[in-house]
Length: 269
Picture 1 (cartoon, rainbow, N blue to C red):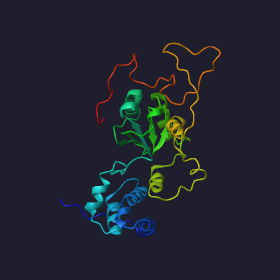
Picture 2: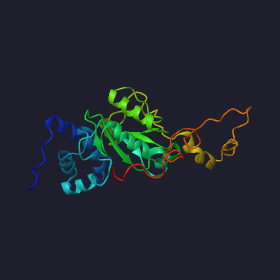
Picture 3: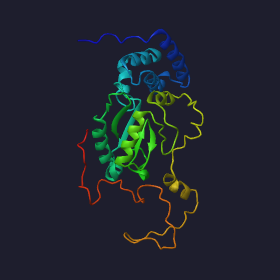
Picture 4: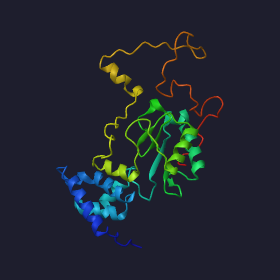
């Protein structure tokens, strides 16, 4: 049967959202270009894009709800059902997967008792596997509300989600301090992050990520001696600082000789 019309926002909520929406729309010469940030705006209100939110976007932009729904259902960053305060995404793309991402994702499903795209009963954590986050030199990478948690292991990822559920202070490896998914959605809608120090901490490129940029600018990289596998550095030479899990002696890979090769979870789980 046809669906009933979407319920309206309460008058005070709609008035507040309309003021924000007009500010967003004014940034664009063509109003329909504002659809993506408007979807983030309505997502910041309810934690996902509801039918009410889609109707609101359509009303503000003079579009049909079908046009709005086509965009909202195309991009995975827009949630279409209630989700947690913290979106925990485990990268399972090629490099992160072979470095341990598959093992982390499977372990977190068991640890939290949820499947892909599902939310814990307390409404705190939504778990999902995600595609490349352009942080391969820090693989395996977990993201929480799009903030980086680099060089993860199964144990560190379990501690991370436990701390999130317990309300403990959790600090990303780099980038801005963590905030809730609704707050993140409002920032993505184009409104300033007003938390003290958040903007200054917003740089996300780690040292290993900008080596190529420094070389392109003509800077000379420091000399580095790479010893054959199994041979240690000379005793009088201090160990070098490890910038990523690629050259760090960390147990992050699920594909080393002590583990069976191949994926540890079925595609889509």
